[in-house]
Length: 113
Image 1 (cartoon, rainbow, N blue to C red):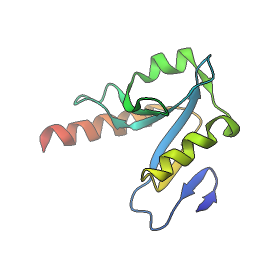
Image 2: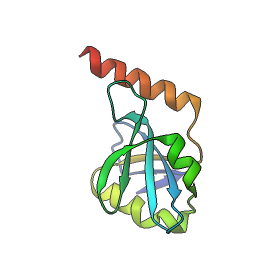
Image 3: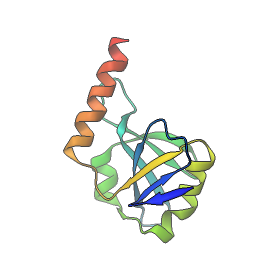
């Protein structure tokens, strides 16, 4: 594994995936994929939890109800993501407007194909 500037990668690295780790009040950590659409409009993003695994999430709701997770909080979830095939992860601290644009563009591409 290669680690550099919050980028975790097992080479080769075909495509990077941005992940923002957030912590619920009960201590559970959720991984948000702010650039990956979970619907055909791109309004919501993909997410991952230890329990339940992949699902969808409203970024605005999750961000309002959680706090940014520290590395010690999300280390196990990061390992799990890498174990299931996420080989190039870029860890972000925020979900940005640019993430929204990328997610909606991907959703548009899915609709058109």
